[in-house]
Image (cartoon, rainbow, N blue to C red; front, side):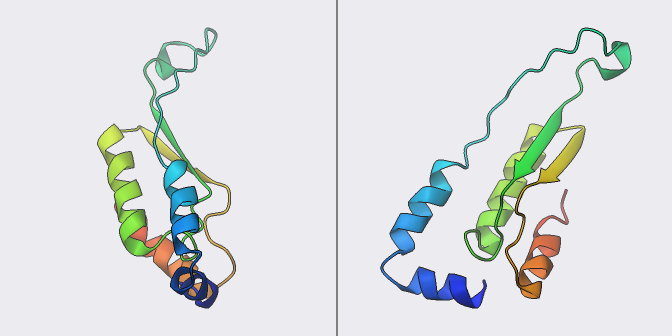
Amino acid sequence: MSRIGRRVYSSGMRERFRAHVDAGREPSDVPIRLPDAGAALAGLRLALVSDLHVGYFLDPEDLAAVVERVVAARPDAVLLCGDLVNQFSEECELLARGLAKL
């Protein structure tokens, strides 16, 4: 976890941030119909994972739980977008280790 993340988590704001993080973490299944896509894409399952903010909002245990949910959904491909980390190199290392099962 980043130095800023450690400070925020150790302060009285931890509960507020945890509630914010937990509120947006439920996966949803959204069917997208592409009538002109052809049979090759029929039944294709994509997982979109966005805005993890590993290290600041998401510690390694939380990331492992997200990865478990993605793996359980059995997608054909996983798309990563948004702010995956914040600004510290150690956050990239946490992200890489955490996403290894994907």
